[in-house]
Length: 234
Image (cartoon, rainbow, N blue to C red; front, side, top):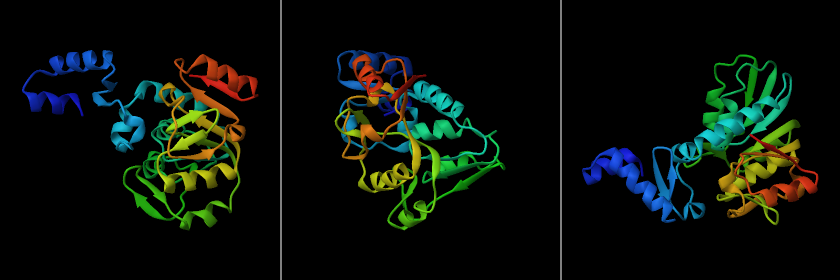
């Protein structure tokens, strides 16, 4: 819920609500988000795209900037429908002769005013929770292409399960994208480390690089680096 909604519901100031939420977060009863709070068991659910976009927004922006710096003119890349991929898309509008495959509608819209970027989208059905296109219709379409780099958000990242997400239809699309990207780059903030979603779409062995923030667990970071996976701290 947002601070504004809670303030109106309980008839107290937003400052009071923020103080109460901070106290509850300190007790481990909820997770603070930009402008509000979410239940502690958020990893078991799929939150709305708008709310997920506000979670760890500062970290996602920095991760997006680090990912954008890796994208060169003339490349063909994949951006999934994650909120962190949207943070990447908002920072590559000046690239030239770039081709972007995405199933994220908001990702595509972020590039609509960039005439030197060709946006390619698979067909399928609209998933409102992720504002994305999913379905078997996209499978053969994605198979036509090869991409230099693929950037993927995730519900969780672990050494055993790799990159995971919560929705099977979204996972299926991501697996197709991973299979056709020469470099698989995970764009995951520190809250995703050690978490496991419903299904895996890339094993750790398939990941070439992870872009994250400074709060990522050092032991997992070291293990990935020892396995030859590049870890970028944004």
